[in-house]
Length: 469
Image 1 (cartoon, rainbow, N blue to C red):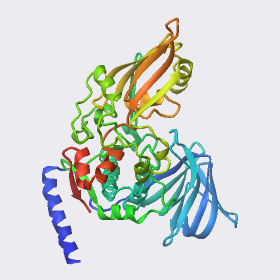
Image 2: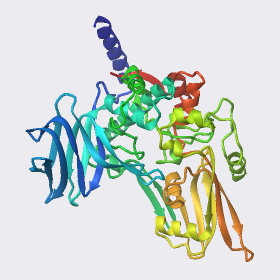
Image 3: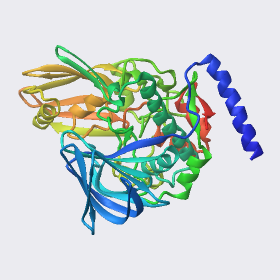
Image 4: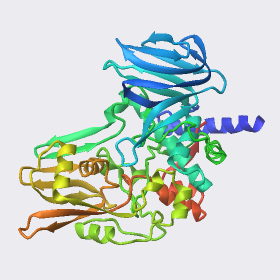
């Protein structure tokens, strides 16, 4: 106890000194967070496992059905068929009780989308929306949340130093986001943006539509699947051993982004989200050797069509099974990949995804790339319309019924005898937006003996590690 007291005192003195230099306050205790599990659903079904206090009423081991009517949540508990009604229904657990939600969608709008029943610790909030739908929110402590995130994002059998690095990254990202929202006094959803002018649409995404909770439970924010799959001791230990540790830069908790595989070069923040430089989210070679940044179309073709040395260049299925959760293992070719479209198929996808009828598709022309080779602005040329689209994620969305793995691709066109485009072949690199920590690259660094601190300092240039609670 005495050592713990002095450690706390030393931390407090250090933070006081930093506050004189950097006036913004940082977190000093573990927060509660609100995670949206189901949103804008016609109904929510599930079960209360154990004892709960439900809007002041004691309930035990009950299945439930919730729907919205007249601005209220109508909650029916089974087998008693007891009905509770209110603008919100709050279910607070007694002891170690849990709740289960049925038909939770994971991988929303990605190629691995599916539904599963999921079980959670903490409180369940059922909220009514004005449009007659129901939202289900899990209130839980940050550290408990992180143990599930680590188990959901990566295979808990991955190296311990990766799990610890991921815990610090995920903890930093969510608290940074919550603190920005509080300081700027606006809803979290305001951080997305779009610039539209004649013939051009540039859009970037953050946590739009998350008005009733802090973060969602899917890839849009961070994967969070509660205790659906029993959280292994190793994942819980990685969170506990890094408890309260954050990435910090110039007196602020880092907005620590991450993705699945960069393809050999990470991307810079401003090329994926708003137009501002973030020093610790600059492009770096993800490799034990140096690779120059992509600066031209010639560079892009040479880089993307090559097979460079990189931490995330992993093709051993046995290694990937230890690193990745089961549904991520379904994506086999991610370091270098290829997608081929018939012209008519791609025309239909573009019309469906963008709402624009391009007519006969004539060309896909990269206008601007980031240093990782990811396209930031792409010109789509057709017989009826030509548009420039960006940024990274919007390009991926326009060119696929789910998502392309990344916007780091080069285009080749096969033409028929008349010279009309018949097939478009996209040859690409990497999986995800490419900013910050490369999950597969970090896993391989840990596999080769790098410590969590080394991994974090590799991906987040200039950032420091601080224990804040």
